[in-house]
Image 1: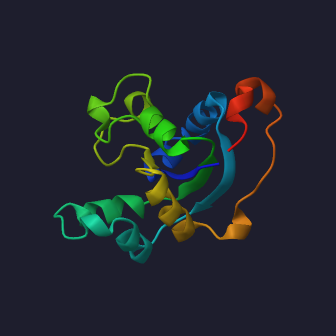
Image 2: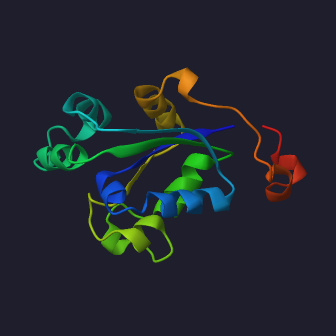
Image 3: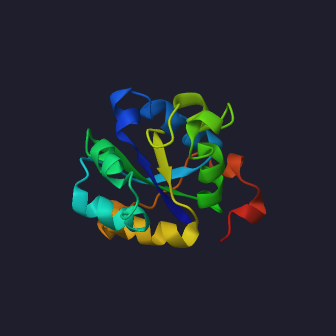
Length: 155
């Protein structure tokens, strides 16, 4: 099974839309295997957004991402990184399609309620940045046999 990281950003937490976002992922059939609330610090943000440190807007990202708690989550299933990226919509929420998470819950390029790992390889790096192995869980969804076809149940 593939895993991916999402961060429900400070705007999602302070606007109380985290449950609505999580419900969409659950209803889609994805499995939540890690979940915790924290306040991020500059050091972890510099590591996470290393590719943006030299950009003039980076201080604004740090200010926003440290302004309130975030929810860190790990979701699991086949091609989950791609599925979540599609569900999240384009980074600039103003251009995100209605029906996507950003399209329905945000209007900003950075205050866009959700970070979703770019792909499965990056997700692996991001997950170990934010989660210890003992914070991730294996269990069976009760609706597993209904959601997935038989050939999809084997990795």
